[in-house]
Image (tube, rainbow, N blue to C red; front, side, top):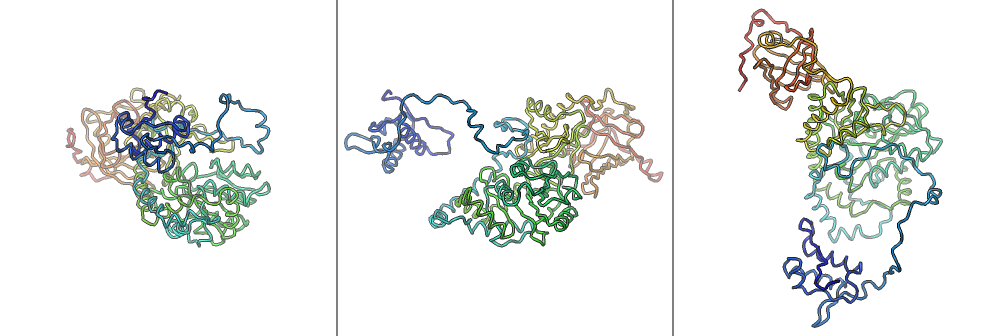
Length: 623
């Protein structure tokens, strides 16, 4: 190796300081043998010139490596690699081993191998797609970096390290247990004692522990259909007879099919994968059913923090007076992918057995992480973070619903949902979700097919999910528009366009006479009723929802033989310009590109004669 060859390359975008990068690169070179034992290192002046950094930066890096024993200083000679650094390492002899192929011998040795369901795989470079409507992938802007750093710094204090670095057996961090007990669980209406809480490596480990403890081949288990594929696999490994219980707009059905089940697994907050929230009536019915047949319930409280339209219902465990519910959840999903901390709440007997079983896998989740989370909670950062996350996801969720309602009213039907991080969408009957997902990806749109959520052959081919966790709100509208164009290209039964639609094309005074003092009656994309009153004075009054909970006002006018309308909030508050056709009592609105945007029943309002003669306004646009 040439003596003047630069072996260290610094990354200007690295979060590490220049000094830390130099130390890191030197240690790597020493341990890999690039700098062999006894090798003299370049002088600090020479290396600083090669790297383009201050000489003092190199001096400090060298001094740190001397203190740590990687380098030794020889008087009047310089710095050398310590010959003792690698003396206990076993060297490699001969050529590197050839690349190995999979041996059939190993396949024969595997016992109880899982055959995975047909899964949807998110591309690892999903962030490079313009429109990633994928649930569970998070843009990094959501992570509370500053607050997490503060909690980490506190957890690394000397006193804290002395508490969590020693041998604690299989006990969890008492500070975190107390924060879960007093900070998180009351949000769900749950009261628990410390001995009723177990910290787990994410919700997945909690599910595994519960299944291992409670299930064998003689325990019939009810699961939701569609439902969480990983839970089905855990149960299949135990040989459990499974009852696939359908889901409707109120959650899992409670009927005679549950009569023989000894265990019921349910995701009531936002059902996986439809995002339907289980009603209070259904929750009570499920608890009564479990009581009658002496069954247990595993409550996977998925996305409990993401209700956007109504207040969240209390957890099943909070309604349980017989200690039948085993509750499990995790910290917010944005924290979970990297942190993997969840918890189980159950009767003390269950927690004791689960702790024994957890010990065979891992004594406990890392205590330094537990203490960091405890500080994150106790400092109020968790509450602030959840509020920010709730508002961010609420904005995205509503933006997605609005865009689907505006652009895909005749292509998509949404499952009823109060929140969550994804929408379950039913497309045209001739749609194939797997094929559409591939075609959408070619156009920069990522959507999730849903067949892997079904265990039976009843999976619909025309359904898919659109997630909001990884896409900024400003891209949602355009992404749905691009998806609408794809659907138009792929579906056989294309929706009407202005050129081929039935009905009389209304313009000018005929258009004014037809719409003035009428009410449009329609159903929006997510199944709610909507009425729009077209007032003679140019006002619009819109009411949507079964409880008339969504209201807006706006203006209408006619210009250039087209109907114009602008809402205060709906349709982004932008001016819509439409060609109009009237087919009997059905009014159809087409945008400037000829797309069918709205279709409604048109009803004449009943007013007195004076009101019928009101001037509906001029032909000029409103300022």
